[in-house]
Length: 443
Ligand SMILES: [Zn+2]
Image 1 (spheres, rainbow, N blue to C red):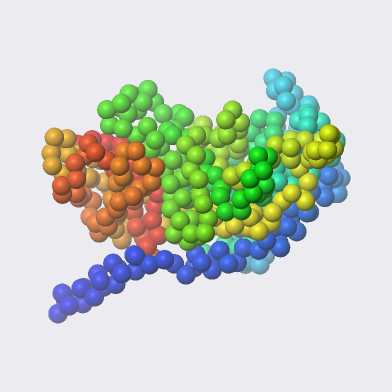
Image 2: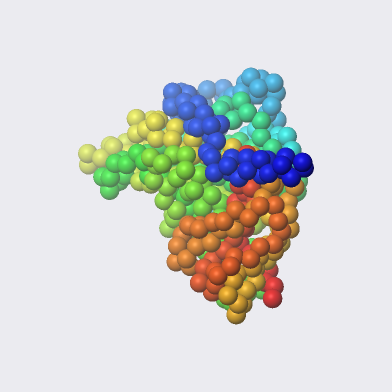
């Protein structure tokens, strides 16, 4: 009799894995462009949010802005039975030794944490920036509305908190407004250090910096494409890891790149109208963003942003010159587009926070053999594992095989030399961890 009972259960597990989740569609639908517009307007109304601007006024400057963001997180928390832990995380920066710091000041981040029910110490982080700048980044008094850079990312982060706080997730979600971006990524450095010191198990950082512009400086108008920037391999890898890559591969398979592929895939499944562009570099050419300080410490982190920037509308004093209007004003922000990119974040955080941890100690074998072999350590909460592989020239994990609740598997007839491989853990509702590229070899 026992066998008869087990069989239907197995069948059910297999079927549910192929399905999409209604919860994820509901999350997409719940994101509001109206609320994002309202929040961007509120942030713009603070005049300037330069990190070194006024902190006393309640209507102008970064102090007023961060207090408003904190109160917004607190009211979201009130609506979900205090599900958010809201606090300031701050570090003191000094003029001395920092050529872009006009005077000593506290760089204050506003953090809201939705604790996970099963893995409270695992964190997926969504960030936007509180601060803005005028043409001169040292100028902390001139109007700098920063509507797109980066009230859009900040408003998206607040809106994601509104939507996701209606649900409970197994892992923790952090919604954060970071400061000091424009003078040296101080806020991101501070929170990355805080995460390290508190032994956070960081699943990844989704840094949102400019998610509202659809008219490029080149004239292209596009409200469907967006970019996912990721560095190839961790910046803090060891010399030995670098050397082993020559023989075993992994040049384009670091943890941040796997996170980028995860976002790309989730969007392809749930938001097929969008065109996610994976860009194989840390950030735009020679420019920076707040995911970088997390990457510096070895955390997975990516930048999500618009596909087409308009440089006349960022880091510019509001003015008109030779018929060109300069300035990052709210008229240029497309709220429907910011809503889409907010949804991109929300569904990926929901998926990651619903998935089991990634498998550990993933090892690969099969040198001079007809089949590729794998071994890994099982993780708590996984109902099974999925082996992914792809042609070495492909950016995405194009082939996969679900292998059930085992800790080793042989892919018969697949020659190790001709593909790259990785393994993900699969939870009971079908949500998957990011893919882990093997870091061990066995014979
Ligand atoms: Zn900027």
